Amino acid sequence: MTAAPSPAPAPRLALTFILITVALDAIGIGLIFPVMPDLIESVTGLGLGPAALWSGALATSFAVMQFLCGPLVGALSDRFGRRPVLLVSLAVMAVDYLVMALAGTIWLLLAARIVAGTAAATVSTATAFIADITPPQDRARRFGLIGACFGLGFVLGPMIGGLMATLDPRAPFWAAAAMATANLILGAAVLPETVTDRIRRPFALARANPLGALRSVGRLPGLRRLLAVFLLLAVAMNVYPSIWAFYGKASFGWDTAMVGLSLAIYGISFAAGQALLVGPLIRAFGEPRAALFGMCVNVLTLTALGLLTSAPLVLALIPVTALGGVTTPALQSLMSRATPENAQGELQGLLSSLTAIASILAPLMMTAVFSAFTAPGAPFHLPGAPFLLSAALMVVCVALHVAPPRASRRPSPLA
Image (tube, rainbow, N blue to C red; front, side, top):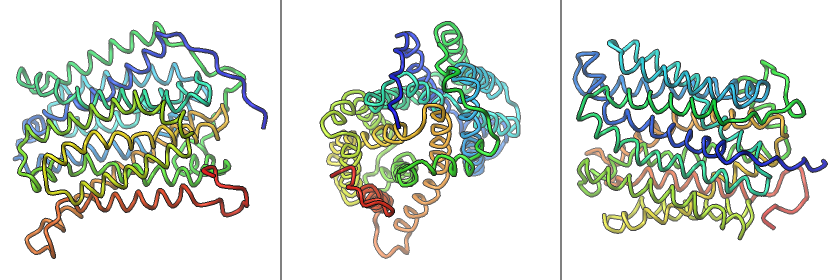
C-alpha cells in the first residue's frame, strides 16, 4: 500500500474549536449530574429511590442510542463531511438542553435523552476531523489532547453545575444550551471541511449500523483484535464512574465532598497525563509498546485500588493512574493508521458504539460485584472487588495485545 499524502495543516482556530467542542461536550454532561435527582423528583413526584431508577433509564437510553447510531453518524461524516455533521450535532444538542430545561414530564426528558444519544456525534466526529488533519505519526498525541479536554470537562462540569443549581435546578441546562449555541456559532465561522472528493466515501446502509460497521472495519488487517482490546479496556476503565462513590463510602467513610474532591484529583490527573505524557511516551516507546505500558500500569493500579485499605494511599495513587491513560490514544492511533482515509468516520463511529456498549455493561457488572462483596452474607468484605475484576480484564487485554497473529508468522509489532 502506498503512503497516503500528508494532511494539510488545519487553521489554528479550527483545531481550537475542535478541542473546545470536546471539552464542552464533557462539561455539558457533567453540568446536569448534580441536578438530575432534584429534576426527576420534581417532574415525577416520586421519592429518591424511584427517581434513581428513572435516572438509570435516561442514562441507558442515551447509551443505547449512541451504540445504535454511532456508525450511522460516522458513515454520514465520511459521505457528507465532518463540518455539517458536527454543526448539526451541536445544534441538536443545544435544542436538547433547552427541552430539558423546560421539560415538565419524565417522558419529555426521556425523549430528549433519546434524541441526544442519536446525535451524540461530537467526540467521534471531532476525532475523525483530527485524523483527517494530522499525519499518522502525530495522531496519538492529538488524540491525547482530545482526552485531556474531555478530562478537564469532567472536572469542571459537575463543579459548575453544582454552583449553578444553587440558583435554580434548571439553570445548568440553560447554561449548557448557551455554551453549545456559542460553540456552534464559532464552528460555523472557523471550521473547514476536511473530507474532499479524493477521500469522500459513498454512503452504504449496510455499514451504517454497529454490526455492519464491525464487519467492514473488522476485515482490515489487525483491526479485529485491536477492537476487542478497545472494548475490554473501555469496560475495565468504566469501573471508576460506576462504583467510585460507593467504594469511597464503603472503604473509607467518605462523604459527598470527599468523593467530589477525589474525582477532581482523578480528572485533573487524567487531563494532565493526556496533554503532557501521551506525546513523550509515544515518541519514546512507539504506539504498540506505549499501549502495552499503559495496560501494565492499569493492571498494577487497579489491583492496588482493589486491595488498599488506606485512604491517603489511595489518594496518592490516583495521579499514578494517569500513566495508564496512554493506552486509549495509542490504540486509537494504531487503528486509525490501519484504516483508509475514506473510512475514518466509520472507524470513529464504531469506537463510539463500543464505548456505549461499555457504558451499558460496566455499571451492571461493577455494581453487581460490589454488592456481592459488601453484602452482609458475603464470604469476606471487599469493596475493592470491582477493581480486581477490572485488573483481570486488563490482563486479558495485555494477552491479546502481545499474542502473535494466528494466520501469520510475522514477528509481533512489539518485537
